[in-house]
Image 1 (tube, one colour):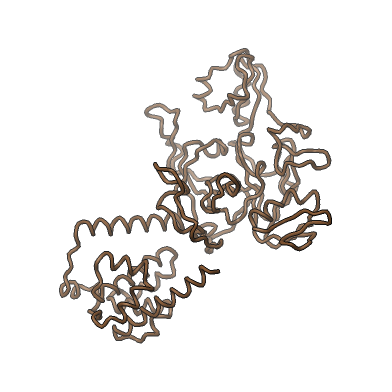
Image 2 (cartoon, rainbow, N blue to C red):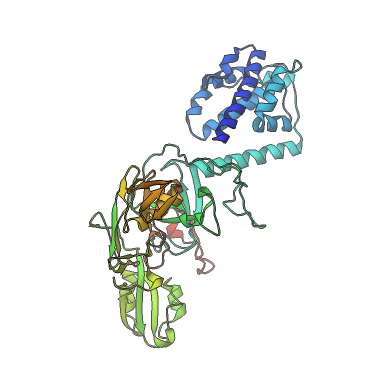
Length: 482
């Protein structure tokens, strides 16, 4: 609230300065206050085409149009040095009133015209030319990356084989609506950690509430989505929402869906969930001792789990597709291949699934859980011993409430309550590599304010195991993501 009040006061002071400059230029002062009409007048005062005002309706482009007209106005008053432009952008509430009240500052004419440049010639230094170019490129790239589209690389195999390690993607911010930066003070092009030196690449001095601009669509079931990893709200990271690590998974469940898994088969609202031939899962391969050639597995890009394999005993745990499993059955050294599906009664700690509590004497695991209802904004859940472990984190960590369990009941923000109404939509995210994916089965729901964007297509794919001439996977270039 204090930030909104301070910002509002400084904006009024800056508009007052612009009011004075408009009057010096022979216009009515009130014309500086009305959005869109103000930019129309700015175009007239600076000699720019008045139709530029239409471009103000286009997100991101409107930022460049406004500041272009604004800086042209500053030039029209003879302010063309670097520090003057920087001050006009960073501290308009200081310099605009000063210039507006300074009798020596006068309107010289339309700064963007040839006549003005001939009458008031100004030669930029080489350093100034470079500074302008670097600043423009940095601002443009930051805005494009933050509001339009961003490149992303697949670092792990959790989406194999739908997406491969080394795939470079373009992620659209526009599809679901660009998220307004919640931590706006940050080092350009760094996410959460400074390159080379390490340390935080952002400041939490200003923290804005979650807001998202309108998008083209809502998240649809089974979209491949990039989002911030929710667990980095906890120690040791304690990162702001938009500075948490980027993850990519498939949105198996959208708000209001009921998701469950039974012996490795996902069901959504009672129907079998999305699957395709690229989905991987773990298979146990029984072969002769040391019967599988490690180099051959690499050549076939079969993902061997070295920790849980015992080659000297002829036991291998391999993450692969169903088709690849059938292929291995035909190898002479292979005796048996079977899917490594956990039994519902398997309660080993390593396979336990969210929310890690005993329900009717059964602990859910990665192949058997649910049903779980995915919260949607406005949905009210009854809170009891069974539902509270599922939704407590969403209520406290993601929606910021204080929840206490007392002898006489449940208290939220100091009030006794037996139900809770959600303030955000949530999603259930899972990787296509079912048995090698850290996803919602391990940490629960993904809140809507963590959503970054929609994965569109692969623009580059690099195979670290490829030969000199096969490092680039040419068949994956510009491949759409489904």
